[in-house]
Image (cartoon, rainbow, N blue to C red; front, side, top):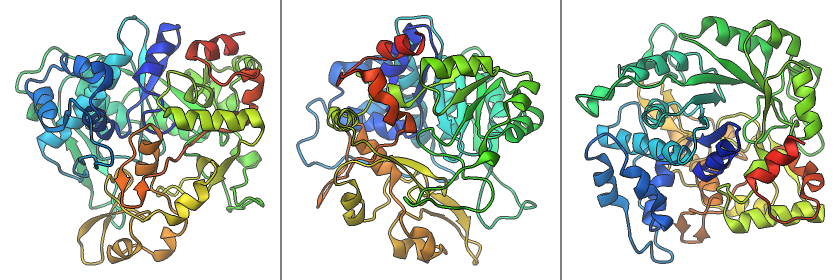
Length: 456
């Protein structure tokens, strides 16, 4: 669903209704400091920050980023430093705090479970993000976009406030010369409270073989799976076999890409189906196939409680109502190399063509070792000369989009540039094209409306 689309308000509403509300944890540190610079309308961030247990952190973040009057029009947001293999404690603490705040707000006023979703591919901030969410009592962690085999062990360690470590994935580094990412809670407070609840861990997978590998070879307990098909929004797994494109330039999926649900059942772990199942019939079919239920993103993404800016939401819903909505699976847009779903908004293509390349947030940068042995961080969506200077192939830069800036702009925090604000970038699953049946002529709806429809 993108960055902060599945925000605390949406997760809170879904959990209150008896389902599992899930917040997106990717990029929350940037979102938090931008909300503060915009004046924190409603004082929600500050309310949750008052509950943060590590002394002094919330006060320091408020002192640096909170603007009670909001930014003057056209004023650029102050940026966080970009993550590297090693960052100082203060930088990590912004990430811990941001994820604590989002989960804490999602859990307010009810006893229902709350989850957090993170991308395995965005390695560098993940352990700090998980720790912040666990300090707030998160109940479930969901992670895909990679192979999250080390995350169960990380959760075990963080629940006891012990140092956690993950192998650092660096391009050009051999398996016999590993680098590590480490996160140590003792660097942030000397005497933490009692042990934390170890959240359940659900891995997002696109094949039964990957699910089996994670169930058997992860470094800790895997509690279940979300089985995501290529019709789901955001990043999709690439097709198996040789890449073939249709007339729209989209990857073509076939029978080899269908998940063997019989093999999923053999794992004796609960699983949920995602992508193309957001209907009463889809839910019932999932249960018949042995699934515990379904995961729904697209229908919730455009409801009143979700984080999309009002302008973007209305633009998309108007297109849906008018029959002009279009979702395209772009094989080149994401710097990760995974196919990525894009909603084609009016002028979206021109904005992408004319946007000046800049990399100033950096979540999707890839660490690489150059021929000279230097560790660099590069992104194929950054300025081409900079990417090539770091040893990147110029061919990798063609068609790439800055997801970091685009997705954050979509939730109402675009960075002002000399040529205008960063343009929004909207992701959605193919279910967007089936929403007229659910909408029945409406141009707005709530999370409860979605749940009532799916359970009907």
